[in-house]
Length: 298
Ligand SMILES: Nc1nc2c(ncn2[C@@H]2O[C@H](COP(=O)(O)OP(=O)(O)OP(=O)(O)O)[C@@H](O)[C@H]2O)c(=O)[nH]1
Ligand SMILES: [Mg+2]
Image 1: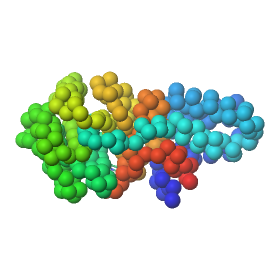
Image 2: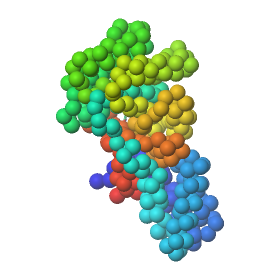
Image 3: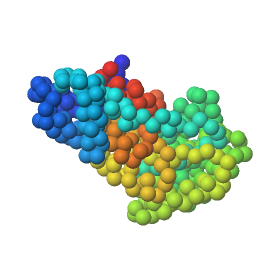
């Protein structure tokens, strides 16, 4: 079954390309203009859309394509190429590993941590969670619930304490227990944005200093339903941390799947996981081929 079958994620995208093909019997300027327009309408950024068009025209010339119907297959290959970041699309396999989860509030950080923790546990590694979102008491509780569901320990402090202190404790504990993977939940919102960015930088520094031997992933969690906002978030967070990958959430409940292609291409950021629901197993490891095939309903 296709990845996005029965979901509206890419339906608008495919429908509008289908219309362009149906409306244009020949591959003329009108066709290319309308096609580019429908890419942009589908939340594909202008630069990325242009890149797609350039590649498409190249392949059309190379293969002597004359029929618009053949465009779908070529688009699929081009999109696959844009989102394929090779090994970088995979979560680091080495241990010990610290995963710092960042992103704005409501994006799906805590939920994704639960799902990722479960995947890692199933793969046979040990996991510990750090509730470094101390901004709201409910945040640590939510993480604890996930910890119980997955069967992993959660390190938490009182509400309002220094998030870096939670991380410090969690690292000591992870070292003492030879835990393979420590996943750190962070707040998506503080008093103001400057504050949030400063805290994140500090947390990142604490991890580097206290756990120099650990491998590191800084995963940015982006809510795909926010469309172009996700792009500006990718930009802002890239400026403060070295983002190693994207978790793209709510790909089950959006018609803005095109955003995934832009983020991957414009920021050269690998997507590592796709959230397809609220349940523990609703997280897919990213695979460029399946992803591109899924867009075109294969
Ligand atoms: N449909 C769907 N819902 C999701 C997905 N991922 C997360 N959610 C829901 O989105 C809401 C917010 O998720 P959280 O994990 O609490 O988000 P957060 O980033 O931790 O938010 P803060 O703690 O406020 O910063 C919850 O209701 C989740 O169940 C997904 O892939 N699909
Ligand atoms: Mg949270």
